Amino acid sequence: MGFGQLEDLEGSFELVIFTEPFEQHVALLREAKSETGADGQRGPIPLVIHGTLEEGDPPKILVRDVTRLEEAEEKLSSCLRVRVQSPDVTRDRLEALKRVLGAHSGDAGVFLHITIAGESETILGVGGIRGVSPSVELCREVDRLFGRPVTERSL
Image (cartoon, rainbow, N blue to C red; front, top):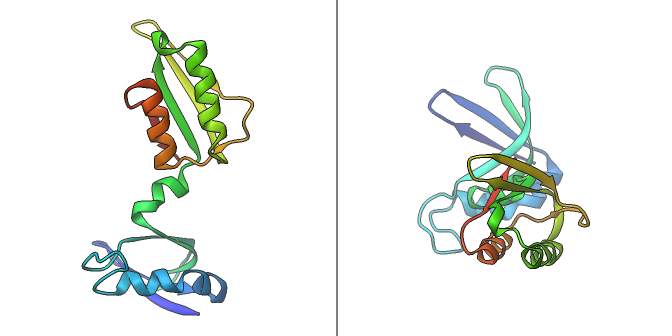
């Protein structure tokens, strides 16, 4: 079990980390407070803390999960949006998109936004796949498929 302090410009919170999440994240917590991380980076490593707020003075956060700030967007994204213009939508590209998405299975939903310039936007859920892991690698592959940035991760 562990305890900590989370501070911002408004005040502070006490962190309470019970045995299971502490054991799961102890290496990351130690690395985050060190002067030099495993990657050679100087200074503390910013973290995103997930938990339940417990009222009190000071308030406490009962920690469930800890994530590096740089990994939070990927881990917390619940959907991937692919925004394309209608001329970019061809049968070959859509088949290639389905193959790329299928190679990155996960829990995030996928929505395809097709825009007809100056007229309309149609949003389609992508069927035939359970979901994706919205990783940086997946976004790069999809962007490369369309020749420009078309992906957007969201909560």
